[in-house]
Amino acid sequence: MSTPLDHEFVRAAARAADRPAAPLAAAPDEEPAGVPHRALARRVKTLIAAYRSPDSALHGSGQALAAATTQLRALRAAQTDTGLFAGGDNVQSPPDSGFTVNDVCDAHVLAAGAGPELRDVTATLAEIARAASGSLLTGGVHTPNHRWELCAALARLHRSFPDDRLLDRIEEWLAEGVDIDAEGLYSERSANYAAHVSNPSLLLLADVLGRADLLDAVERNLATTLDLIRPDGTVETVHSRRQDQNRPFPLAPYLPHYRLLAIRTGRGDFSRAARLAAAGGIDDPDLLAEALLAPDLTRVLPAPDAEPLPRDRYLTTARLAARASATAHTVVYGGSDVPEHRRIRSGLACNPTFLRLFAGDAVLDAVRLSRGFFDLGPFRAAEMQRSAAHRYRLTETLTAAYYQPLPTDRRRDDGVYRLADEGRFSAAMAFSDRPRDEVSHTTRIEVDLREDGADLRIDISGPRVPWALELTFRPGGEPEGAVPVGDGRWCLAAGPMTYRAGGDEIRVEAVVEAGEPLAGPDRSDVLRYDPGQDYTVVGGTDATTGNRVYIGGHGPQTLTVALRARRS
Image (cartoon, rainbow, N blue to C red; front, side):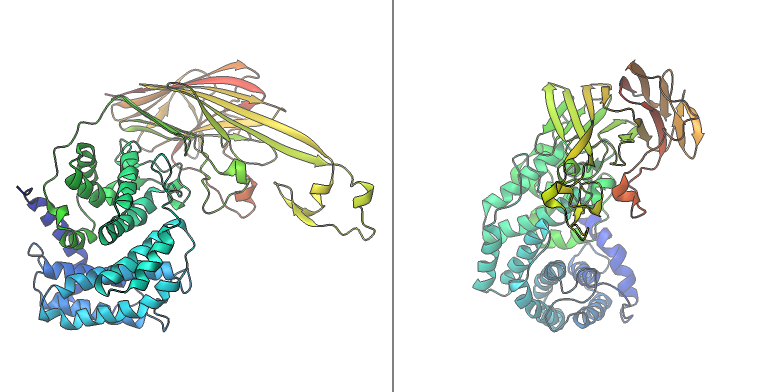
């Protein structure tokens, strides 16, 4: 017996499509000005889906067809003689054009099944798709997820316009292996690209090619993501190697994937995630087209599993740990790429946040540690070890050098030496040829995760340098017991403090075990966050915003910090 349809889901998807489609249909002859090619293709797909869906206010609308024709005309004009699309930061980009062709091909399937009224629209979509086929067939990429987006475009082209060369090229890319690790994380570790690119692309490829291994990869990623869902309905991104590492990512874009696999597999945990992803309402206009193309999406979800609490997860590949209970959700992170690569770079995990704590409305968004050591930036763990069930040790050793005169056989009469990078800066000094005197600084942070928060033991060794622990709380409350120092900043030098938001709270208490007393509120030179020279040399920063509480001093020093959550 087939599973009944979820009529409310379909109606919600139709309403989400109608929101952007209705204004376009109301002015069907208005030429789009300055609209990127990807947005044009999405408009066309959404208008055709609305035209096709009995649940849409634009079902069978001639104005929707006229608007689609107008948008298509602009899209065709944006296509160059290579078949690729003009515009965007990436010039003559096969993968960027692949995003557009994916929507074009889906729109083609929807239009081709709609009858003779859409004959001209179908023909234009086919013309656009065929014109792009050659460049996508031979084109290259520059990020890991682009491979699967490009493969999905080739598979969609083959679906509508069968060509064995397209399949051969897909196999060439897939032969590299899907970049998913043993924990179920893609190599970019990005929620954004998992939800918007890798997972939907691999699901499409699995269906078109009959590849169960690709479906398995998506299921593994979704299973791991379950443990990355935060109490505020977002997905953890601190470990990401892409742009989302410094901002929250909503769960909503995962909705079609959790929903589809929950319905196909019966997994109650995926059903729970799908319901949570839709809890704030369905706003994605693409969902209607997806539901028309994959009718399984419209079936009623299986019964959801209850969320397992307490819950612990340690992702060894990303060096990310999380402990969730009814009182607190705490994340510990030690997987930055910066210690190994010694640079800030797009494509590296650079976020220096090493702990977060959620307690209802009271949220500690980021805990970071600055050190004034040769301007090398904040603490980013080079190692993370699990020493006990809920205990982790984060370690980083920084090294800087003073250089001795060149050996006799390395000297030049003209005084001209290689311009070289020594890890902090570059100079015409031939650094690698010189003896060096090293100065080292080691930071160890032991984190004991508790059901109601965490205990930190911070040990700073090496020369006497200033340090500052920054605790950034989400706006909505105010620290009580800390001394305000202006500009949304507070100092905690003695005694405990409490951050209250609504009826929830996070209590903080710091105790010095060894070393000098903590810095007072008059020490603005110590109580600050320093992003390091990789940012400041170009006038940038990765500083947080919010209510920032500082605990600071001069190392060497050992202190403990107790974080306790209480829910109303």
